Length: 386
Image (tube, rainbow, N blue to C red; front, side, top):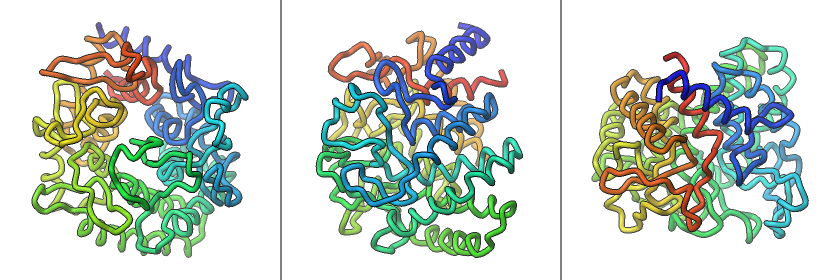
């Protein structure tokens, strides 16, 4: 398929997922509603194509920002929601949750990151001034509730016993990652570091020098601690997480690839990290797997234990681009184009066995969404200037 036709199809995908308010619903037919993490990342992906999506996403999530401590909803002051199922029928699918549901460790820093990227792209200081207080309160959540033990890392442990056990992007109600909470998941530390940098950038326009100084100080401490505590010297790679006893969960996964765009990785560790992502146990002709094929828990047909997620690859791609690793970034771009051409779509995720792609959106036992905002928007962003 030529690039022009692919762009038209991907734009149609995005239109199908656009809400009346202008943000992107997560997917179709499942998750056809507002998700914090998904909507923020897809808005970032669409920023140079249609920045109005980012504005709508920021405004909507600011409107629903947490105001109180509510364990059933996992709500806390300043926290950005995980998802909002608006209809009674959708809410009935999760009867022990309360909506908006806030069980996400990364929506809040991603909100702050997108705010900075939106201003940088559009110069729309008027809108940012309208949600400035929401951004400052989000910073407050990171400090007070995200980092309850004061060690500098954001961690999660569910407040609702029926809620999400894992609350990073590889989330789920069971302990499929085998990490004892509270969990400091690796990519969320990078997001928080990038959120601090975003806040420092925003304070140039909105004052609050005390906020800037505090964010700067926290960023310095986080960078130093993180590069020691998460680094697996034997693997020359970052651990998936620190558990509740501050021990490394030493699985080799794609998650540390998300650190590349954030600036958190020490210079001397960058090439080790990038090289590891492209080793055969993680790399496939259709993108990077979520988990190493050598891991005892590896399952290429599972939701998060070895499948390939386009949005995961897009975030790694953006980090590689930002650091000047253009050849590696182009490998990922070509891999996702190859997947689209073979499947005729870019679903939520798929798997690769013996270098062959398998469409998991056609297998009822796995239920990969055939249409997912951050898959379509990510590929569209990759080819937009072609």
